[in-house]
Length: 404
Image (cartoon, rainbow, N blue to C red; front, side, top):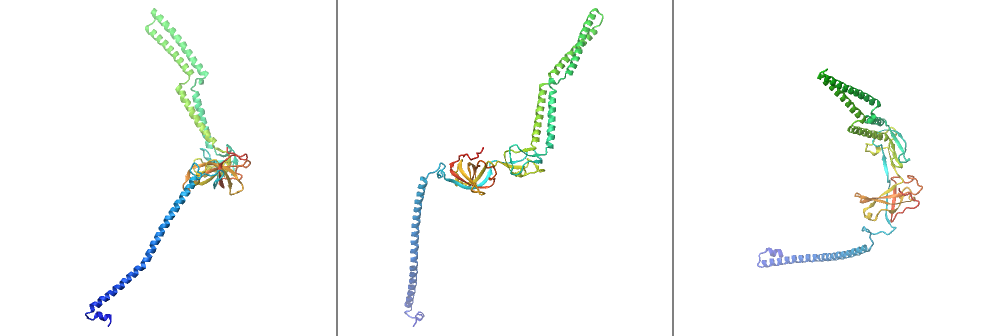
């Protein structure tokens, strides 16, 4: 008889058989659970062991790092440092070695001053070395010449108007005429006085009426007033105009003179001289060109002149190195065009503002030309140059051309 048949057959032992069967199933499940727990336990132990070793490794790494940091701090503290806090550089050591470009220390775009017009004459070309004050070009000056002539005529007229108010402007003929009028008036006054005396005498004898006396007395007063008037007229003629009128005339003369001088300045500006001694870099106009100082475009100027005896190299020094740089550092300069051609120089100035796009600060290095080398014969603006700065002060040597 099978177990299934026992389970289905009604028997008094059926309940006992079922219980035994249930006990076997539970034992099987318990054994399975025990086997599963036994499989997990090694892995759990391995994980705990790995975490423990990882903690030990991290602690050891931190201890080693802190010890190395303290050793580095101790070595840094013991190393010599400059006043700015940067590590000190031994005398003669290289401070920086950077590439830059040559630029003129003085470069001017030449254009007419306050005048505009057509260029009628050009007296230069690219590469010419010109002296300060040398004529470079001339402009058509017809308009400015007419304005000067008009202003000069007005100035001359204002001077004559002032002179006409002065006592010296009175002619001798005018004085003689006024004197003759005065003599005539004086004679009439004397005659009127005599006539008045006769009339009064005749009135005392009763040969005339009181009206005759009154008429003679009026004629005498009129003659006397005429003389007094001519006296004052002659005095005013000899004294000249009032001081207020003369002052106004002086102001007119000064204003006319200022206008004439301004017109003369504008006329003179039609001749364009070289503002500095230097070399013509570019020529931007020719005969027939129209030039104007009111143009903000540099290309509209006449030319560009630079002093090639004063060239500089502009280099970009990183911010982390700028504390080591100072003025008057001795430098050596050479160009990519000829690296064997060495020039001396020195740090002239450090720009007061940094370039935040590249985290650099621009430094200008003056280049010293040797005696006998013509400016611009080899070194030219915008050429690439390499600068090596040394931790020592620059000093001129007998073969150097010093900057003035």
